[in-house]
Image (cartoon, rainbow, N blue to C red; front, side, top):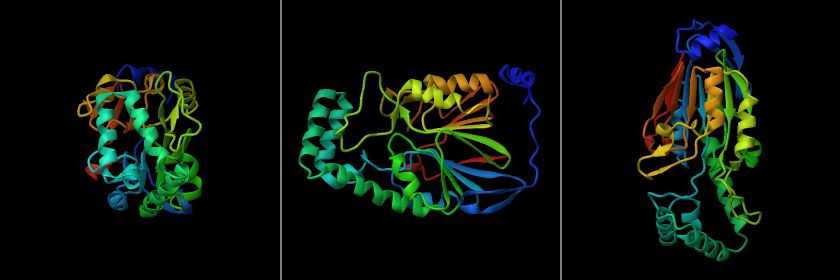
Length: 299
């Protein structure tokens, strides 16, 4: 797209779009796929639902996963998730109650008491994460492009992802002739710093680190991230009744480069699932753990 076309797109004017054309390209695992009309399925916030993930790529040329594969705390089944496995449903119920109250001091104290009750907590968490990843990555059946969420351990992905999965973070790849840019992780709350001795460390990034990674993508057709751009309708969770952190860097990138789509997850029950910003369709692709339905892109 020329600079003139970019300005027109950002102003909301019609810009000529490329027509689908036959092409041959290599997917993850060295597969060669012949495409004329593309169909890509997109999911986020899988949180351990390997059974649904196994069907997510059915009928698609490729599958895009926008993070949060791990089921760490299951707030609908306290016996589930890694915490449920390690500490039991009653303790997870107490954890959930303290979190919903916003009592950070009591929550931190209770969580520390739980970890203190486990011999070698890091090893216990690592074993549970590896077990989940083995099942989740083993479930995918289509060429898959994945970026991590905050409830992921990206340092394990290269080891465990398998041949069908290409792991991406700060990377751009072509799928069916379009440039897909991937940014993983979520934003660290202001003033929060991870404990070095923590048994579990979510994938959180500073605003500066995250924004620099987004800027490094350059112009893309599809902007893929775990977190949404910083737009109130997309960041507010109507069930949790709180606003999650959206990215100002993503919002700036959309305004500058006007991708066709901005795709993300993270907010499980957003005030709005979609938002039109100029020529860009901003879309929360859904809470896949419970919807079990991928968002479908066609071009």
